[in-house]
Amino acid sequence: MNESRPSIIEVRDLWMSFGKKDALAGISFDIPRGVIHGFIGPNGAGKTTTIRILAALQIPTAGGAWIDGANVVTEPEEVRLRLGYMPDYVGVYEGLSVMEYLEFFAMAHQLPASRRRSAISDVVELTDLDKLLEVEVHVLSKGMKQRLCLAQTLLHEPDLLILDEPASGLDPRARIEFRSLLTELRRLGKTVFLSSHILSELSPICDSVSIVEKGHLVAHGSMEQIQNRIRSGDVQYEVTLVEANDDVEAILSQIPGVSRILLEGRKLSFDWSEDDSEIHQVWAALASRKVAFTRVRRHEDDLENLFMSLTTGEVQ
Image (cartoon, rainbow, N blue to C red; front, side):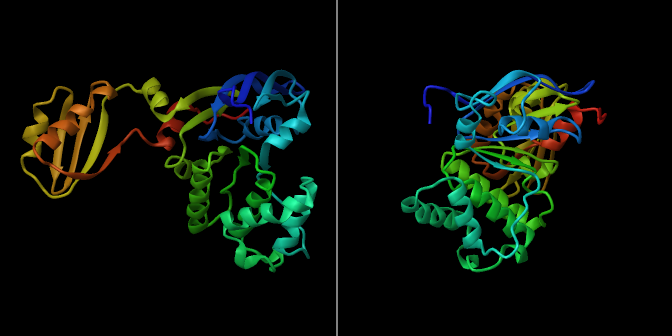
């Protein structure tokens, strides 16, 4: 791991052309270490093309990309050692048990025999596959197959995981469980770069996002940065109070920037027109009057809304 480089992914003026069609048209971005980054866009936007280039599986027409300092074109073997790549469709080998499958990939990663067992044990524990080691992989549920494929991408202990549509085809429970697994990987210091069409699944876990359309980078940054870029009016907040309090409206009406206050039992909503850095005034005013609350929801904190605001829906 190269600690001197602040970004684990660096993309500079990346182009990919297929005949006269530009799948990527000069995109550039950086991804810092230790985050979950969502890479989103409509079908045909260039997501999978970008991911294949980052995984050193496709050579770009122009521009460059680096994984932890290794060039994806000139140092592909080094790149593959530093990342774990999970494509949108991962085939499994019929007739192999879960343990045999993991042993096969451990050998493919050229892990020495002395390390192989401990590496498999670690990923099995992380992905909760310990009770399925003797089960043949082709009979696993879709969710368990995704866990198994993620486990094999972790065998060589990469710092970066690149996942293409990892929640595609999963039922709601499997999606929630897979999302929890990704947050655990972030806690362990991994960087997760994933594409998905399931925007509601990304919002709660992503630290930052890139939005692409027709080969162009439409937006890139933290959720707050993107919100501030497109924000054209007031932001609405919803607050759940611990108990109903009729004084709340009077308290908030004294704060500049607060308007359209609505109190219904324990549910409070209001519009905020000032800079986000000043919203602490609202929470301080409530706290000073001993008004306790359990939940705050900022309405613009919604990846689906951001996506709809920044894309047109056109395909190439």
